[in-house]
Every structure is written in structure tokens, then in C-alpha cells.
Length: 123
Ligand SMILES: [Zn+2]
Image 1 (cartoon, helix red, strand yellow):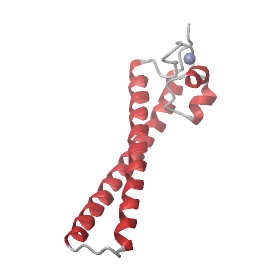
Image 2: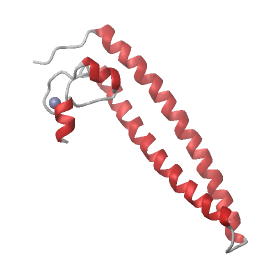
Image 3: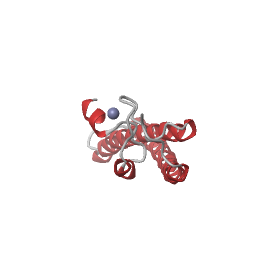
């Protein structure tokens, strides 16, 4: 049977997760804004095509880079939200696969971890 984390310990991690969620959400908002600006500048350069325009291709590259960073951030936000839901359900800190306790040292590094090291490695 997995040990239950003390409420004060869960509260501490919940506070960290909430902080992380706010940080990630503001990052995503920033990306959205930058991507919107990139879209606008791209469509305006389409209207006046210039084959020698190096600026347009670097904009496209930046755009792709931003998209993948944004996707990673969204994935991370999903994990943080899932961990937060667990703090409410009382299952925070318990491995989703084997039901054992996730070591506190691991949660300290990855507060949104939902699997113990062994199961995370197998996945
Ligand atoms: Zn496990």
C-alpha cells in the first residue's frame, strides 16, 4: 500500500504546480502573440513576392521553431494540470502504473511526475 503524503507536503507541491501553471500559461500567451505577428508579416510578404528575400525565410524558420517550443510548453502544461488534479483527488505522488509512492526526491525535481522512475523508464 502506498504511503499517503502529508497534507502539508501535498500543499507545498500544489503551490509549486500552481506557480508553474501560471508561468506556462503566460509563456503560451506570448507565443500566441508572436505567432500571430509572424502570420501577419508572412501574409504581407506573400503579397509582394521577392525571391531574394532572406528575411522571409528566416521568419518561416523562426515560426517553425516557435511552434515546436509552444507545443512542448502545452504538453508540459497538460502534465502540470494533471498533477494538480491529483492533489485534489488525493492521489498525488502515487505512480499511475504500479501504485507505489513516487520518491519525494523525484517529485522535488519533477513536481508533475505521474510515474515512479522504474515505470517512467519502461514507458
Ligand atoms: Zn511505478
